[in-house]
Image (cartoon, rainbow, N blue to C red; front, side, top):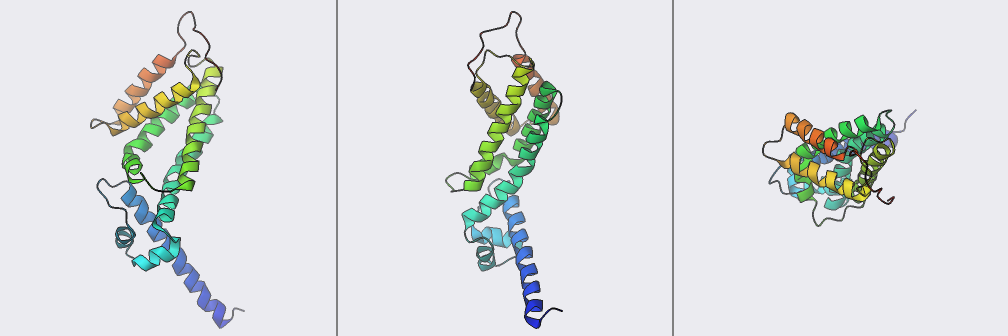
Length: 201
């Protein structure tokens, strides 16, 4: 049987969880809104909360933004890991590149919003995403689906920058993304006669 004190604590915990989730969703919304200002006050207003409530939930603005960014990145990283377990490395790489462009098209503003902030969790997840892309490329190289005469690190950087650029294009569309990935995969396909093998990363 719960005591009166325990009964009081349970609603408070529920309110704290609700407020945390509201602040998190508000920050995620503002992170991808062009021209949005990321302050405790604007996040609180978007969430329908007081600024003090947001601070109590996360401690600092950077901690809240770090958590919100991680929430956005984690599904993409999970998908990259799933792609690493697929049977066809070339098809898995192509499918993930399309998903990466789709994510970047929806979230490109986020990169600008995060400049200058101290976000340790976000930094860790960005490294995990880069490593997953590198691993997808390694599997595709080992399977003979893409060429080996370009260093893996160069290929990773090329794809990362190019997918970001195409995602930000004013003409961005699923058709444009599919055409871009097709051209990129054609360019990465092993060339007749082979080429010099790049050193391992």
